[in-house]
Length: 64
Image 1 (cartoon, one colour):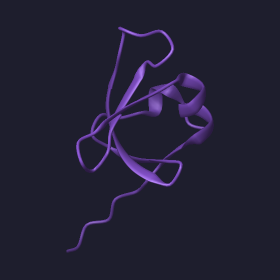
Image 2 (tube, one colour):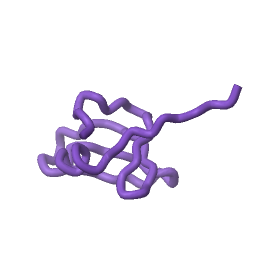
Image 3 (cartoon, rainbow, N blue to C red):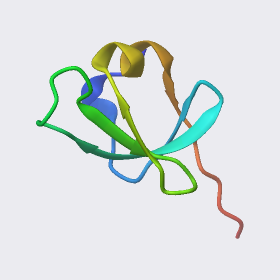
Image 4 (cartoon, helix red, strand yellow):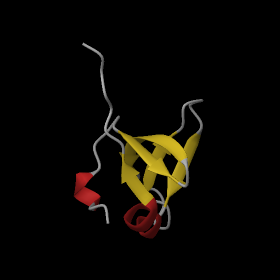
């Protein structure tokens, strides 16, 4: 389970097979407070339950 405080802006996460970058916490909507962007720049808003149960952090590797 992913902690809400563990989300870091511009870090890569996986949700239902998609790789998403965490953008920000939105105060606008109660039901979808977490905003992510996919590789095409498309915005995806997720609820707290979705983030806790279905979002996994991906470790990015860089070449030396």
